[in-house]
Length: 200
Image 1 (tube, rainbow, N blue to C red):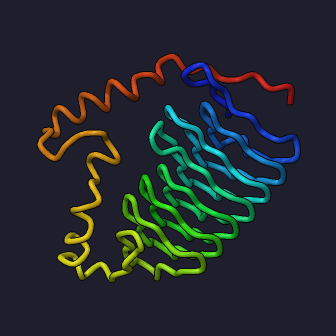
Image 2: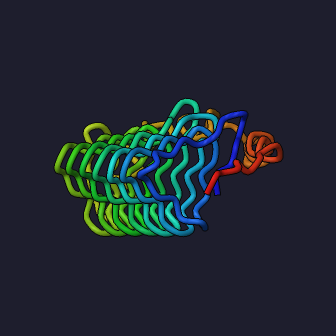
């Protein structure tokens, strides 16, 4: 389903494929040969999502663009099932495995791999060809890649990357109640969404 959001609608190259059960919302641009499979959600909240040529976004993946952190996914990229790409730049020929999570401001260099359930934290840069192993966490610029049991080391780096400011535009002093009120207002813009009629 293609959906107009904030007055903008998706652009899909005629040679691309969007599955009937996929949802593509707002300023999303899908290039030639790209494939968006069943259950995938590509949503340009208030920032663009760009999908390159011959890229495959598999079942139930989520790709979310925001104003300060649009998503740019290069050519010949595989986005695995249940992967989560939020405000990230993914260069050409990257492998993003099942369940991987890429957070706003992250950059994944050409030919890199983020393996099953790997996490790339906010404002983290993965070098071209670098691998984030299964379930491991990449944090920092340049990335330090650590096993999840090394939480204190991860947090020591992550604390300086400003997760709340990067993702939500708030300081650490904002309460959960206030944060969610703001998020509710922001996502309330979807009340005005409209399905885009296609000629198919």
